Image 1: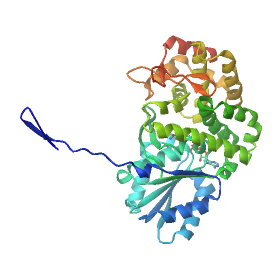
Image 2: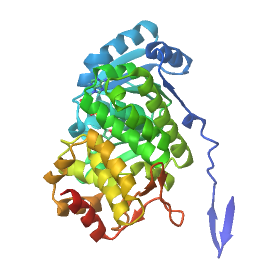
Image 3: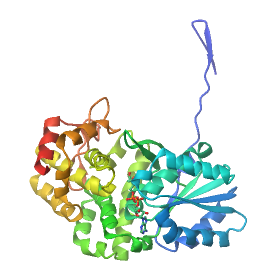
Image 4: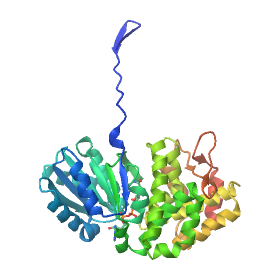
Length: 378
Ligand SMILES: NC(=O)c1ccc[n+]([C@@H]2O[C@H](COP(=O)([O-])OP(=O)(O)OC[C@H]3O[C@@H](n4cnc5c(N)ncnc54)[C@H](O)[C@@H]3O)[C@@H](O)[C@H]2O)c1
């Protein structure tokens, strides 16, 4: 279309992409992963390369076996396995660049699909590698930690940490499929099971009281890795996350609810030099942010105590004393969700219900209240 305004001619072309079909994908929970993956891959057209990306621990546990299974079943496709050192310290641009350079050397083109095999760190790093390799290639998530199963493998957030804070560089890039095999949790430590459970219970606190009670009542069975209990928790957490992401993929509003506990949590995680697990830090964040809600009169003291009871089983609350209040406050200001200096929080009004005000899901709060809440713990 050509326009002529005040003797200046300009052209305007509307780019309205059709409904993006590739953003629809299935999350399959349970069943035989190897079989399902093989069937799924066979249905994909124009795939000539598969790159499995994992970390060095998961490589030995599941990566090499997956590589040999896929090689047997896909003889016409080039399949490679790449890995990097495990741990949050390696969730960096450097790791992404190293992986991409290896993919260039393997001559991977846009006809490549990445299989992300691992926990949340692998998901974020390898998802971002796929999001930016040749301007974006498809990827499949196979989460191997409880945290990745209930949360990070779904929703398309990928990225890396920087010296300025967590997840500050990244992209929204949805996977083309997610395959969850709860059996893989059998090799995971109790510490990491609790770590993942915190992200699940976070979602139940904001959206599903019945499931919050279910976790409390089945806590022993969860730690014993009871298959049906875990399957139910994973399925319900993914349902909640998917519902929120479908309504607000790019976190312009409602998706921010999933950051409950994360304003304080990210600050503490960074101050611990990433020695605390992500879920542990979020657990502390949930406690402090619930305390703020209690001090503001939004949450009753009885409900606060319920939250403290369950989280007290999953994190060592006294470890909060390792941190200084001023340091936490400073770090919250650097959090990427702090807009023009305002640090915002998600508040519960009850288990299963969160506060909204004027269509907003996150809220600023007087720093004195945050300080008071932190003083309760520190
Ligand atoms: N993208 C998102 O939406 C999102 C959401 C929540 C968290 N995250 C990110 O997730 C990350 C944390 O993820 P995580 O807790 O899974 O950590 P992780 O990926 O570091 O995994 C934890 C440890 O468990 C090992 N491991 C993985 N699977 C195993 C298995 N089945 N058996 C034995 N060991 C296994 C790993 O090698 C690692 O040492 C953080 O970086 C966080 O920011 C992302």
